Amino acid sequence: MATISRVTSTSPSLRHDAIPPHNFHIRNTLSFSSNYSLKRIITSGGRSGRRLIVAASPPTEDAVVATHPLTKQDLIDYLASGCKTKDKWRIGTEHEKFGFELGSLRPMKYEQISELLNGIAERFDWEKVMEGDNIIGLKQGKQSISLEPGGQFELSGAPLETLHQTCAEVNSHLYQVKAVAEEMGIGFLGIGFQPKWERKDIPMMPKGRYEIMKKYMPKVGSLGLDMMFRTCTVQVNLDFSSEADMIRKFRAGLALQPIATALFANSPFTDGKPNGFVSMRSHIWTDTDKDRTGMLPFVFDDSFGFEQYVDYALDVPMYFVYRKKKYIDCTGMTFRDFLAGKLPCIPGELPTLNDWENHLTTIFPEVRLKRYLEMRGADGGPWRRLCALPAFWVGILYDEVSLQRVLDLTADWTLEERQMLRNKVTVTGLKTPFRDGLLKHVAEEVLELAKDGLERRGYKESGFLNAVAEVVRTGVTPAERLLELYHGKWEQSVDHVFEELLY
Image (cartoon, rainbow, N blue to C red):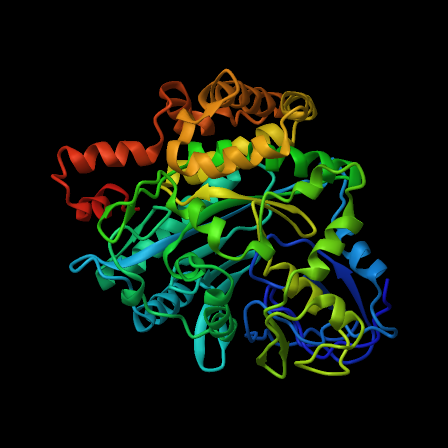
């Protein structure tokens, strides 16, 4: 690994003390936020300094300066540094939601979001995260609040030990947000895709990385801007103990991701009308950017490991490099070129580990590897399902018996079958035909394995699966329930969904 010789600025993801330039050491710590950069705690033998309000989200810059140029091995070692013993495994949940004016149902403007963030910071003692003069997020311990491009409000939770803690964190966050938002006449909606408003109606957040992405997206897919401005997800981030354990969990996660997409499908409306999908959010990823999305067939190759993921990521086109508090557009260039000092946007410069971690956050497959694994297939939804999603994956991936059974169950699924499921569940959900039955029948078995896995953990967590048990039993997705309401008592007015799915 590159040795560390100095620190010039620090990650926005954790609170840092200002420190004298001598007598310090650095130790790694894991944080689950998808939007924040290389997590290092800097501790000093000297006096403790004042707290800093840190600059931008996600990038850090020059926080780690290598005494020799980074090698591919350093990038592999960075991923491998996520390995931890089972007693240190944690659960990190992230969820996004749409803020809207209770009167007009219109999306929140940045000015309202700024007022909301400032209100939460002052009332509940969060630190503000700034980009230039704009507040763009909040930080408290290992939790962070950040903004997606269209103002979707995201909580990136702390790494926690049990699902009870996870669900308590979600509830506490929703309480705090509501306490401030309701006084402003603002509500929040738990759904996977903006049901009513067109893309032109959605404000853009003042974050430099989003300017670059907005220009680039139309060049590589027809739905990337909808992904940026009109989708919300819930995801869980989970640990692994070794490279072999990572591979097993990665494969199980990819194989079962279409089942998670179906169980949590909750985005059937676009521009005020049914859109023909149960998960429009999931469908959007199929035409966002083929270079950085998808089901990653190579994960199932015998040769797969940390090195193969690094090779993949090295050739995913970059979005940006962050230097001197500015985003430099590097779209279409590769990290492989950067490693060789041949990046046309900053010729001659070499990358830091921070650049690598920032780059990893711009890759969007159905399961993503960083120093932990992210399960990325589910639509945003009401609070009970925000607790159910991590429960589903913890029951399968954190229990060795259930994990092995899933791997046995899916071992003979072909690449074509996995891709077919990924494409079709967005329309037909659990009713998707699979082999000699329906995906519902596989989901029944998988949900039982998740429940068994949670029970073996011994924390009495299996109740968190109740929110999806009915979906599996009936084969009717949350989206199909919304469509029944739309065609029934809502009399084909989508406005009612803002009440139905209000947090």
